[in-house]
Length: 71
Image 1 (tube, rainbow, N blue to C red):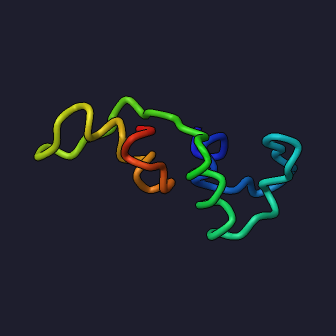
Image 2 (image 1 turned 180 degrees about the horizontal axis):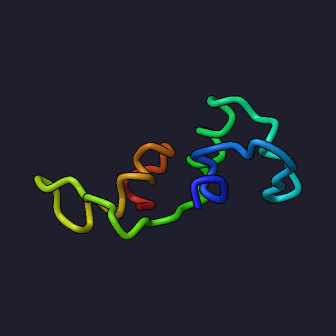
């Protein structure tokens, strides 16, 4: 799951996402891929306890720079 979510890179082989070989990308490039909406919600995900459910759902969109009116 970490490889699919671009959190880790494979130790061998290739992984293509949207026709791009993400197995060759550096950390900054992987972060950019994650910001574009490749989301996986892990079962042990701990949302920010001081935020509402809506705020937690919108957090990745905030990081992606999506305007508040579009979120």
